[in-house]
Image (cartoon, rainbow, N blue to C red; front, side, top):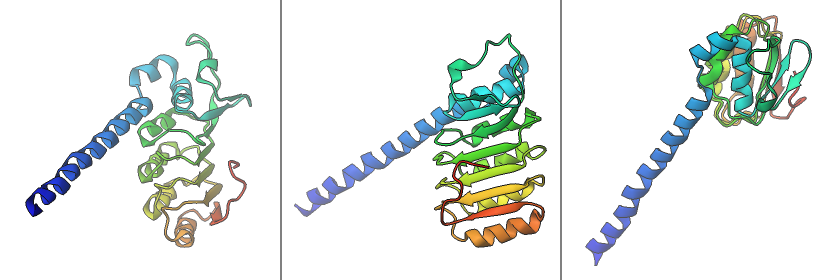
Length: 203
């Protein structure tokens, strides 16, 4: 009876663990496919249009340089129509991830990025913000549970930042220390944040 009991306990563990791994691998693959840049598409329609498609396809919003806001992928103009430059990306509640951040490199007027309540945003995405270092002046990272202290410190590369908002980051163990570290690298940047929410979704 003891031997049978041990076998009965061991089998479910063997069957259950790979299933979790398979699910994680599957959804990671799906996320990658929805996010990663397509060089041919970028060449065909331009970096700002391709970046807008990436953000909207994953549930985010953008603001064009003419002030118009867009949240619906199906509202994009046809490929033949020229589009303005992107000045803001709002990734609130979206599924954008680090796979898509190379899109930022071609957006020459992109100033603001908001990443709020994004489960796919992690330390790799923090490092990926470097693709926008030439133009980004305002960044908000909030309620992104997979971002850690190491990821926050990657923001030091954004040397044109004027405003940085950090709050509700459960994966960060010492936010104050991170802020001091960033301030030493970005002395001209106003760094805001703490445990309490501040001006959520607004840079």
